[in-house]
Image (cartoon, rainbow, N blue to C red; front, side, top):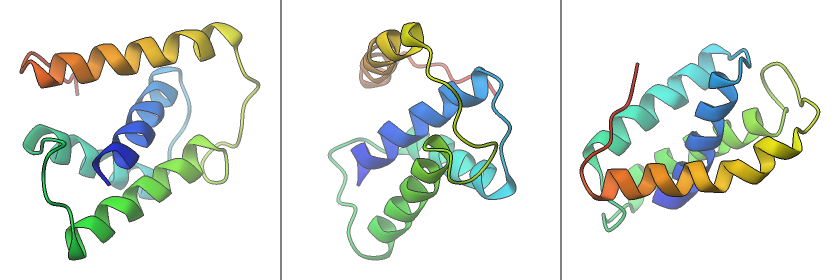
Length: 104
């Protein structure tokens, strides 16, 4: 559940940074992710209601990232596709080392 949310949350953050509009539902899922990742590590036990909530927010963000909710799907920029995994890896590495800084 942790990594499902991480992948979708980071992609949604990149979409927002790239200028994509959001909805109230997407904003709530992003806010959940902000709090969740500030207080959780991947080795947590995310079962029961907590796991269901995490997967539900991941699903919301997946729908946003895939263009099903929000402004819709945009044309793909090959540069963005190439650099996104590097940004995700760098972000997760910084979080693991305790040096992340989330700008709000």
